[in-house]
Length: 105
Image (tube, rainbow, N blue to C red; front, top):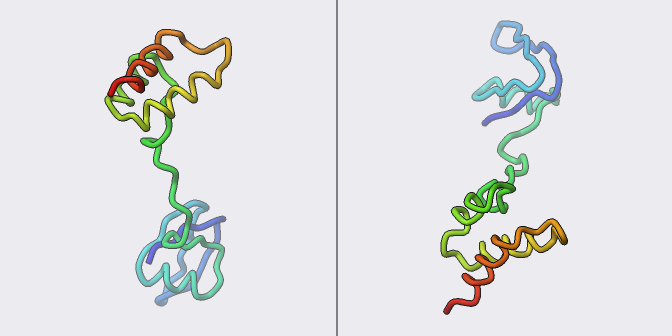
């Protein structure tokens, strides 16, 4: 069990007072106790997972985007869509490279 405090507070558990800061991660029996007694904590087991940055088109140089794409056609399509969404600010060299990859069989 793992929880994260949502604000600073104190709790009495296992014959001692625990002073907890906001954003502190607590595990084990104390975490179980805090969650069961309604303390201001978030259950990390049920918290939404953070989005994987590896699935997002990087906002970097042409070389960084090309490295991220590699030879993955799905990533090339995502990168091309993201670049073309920039309108007049789209980098023609990147668009050409991505289109070339997507047209290759």
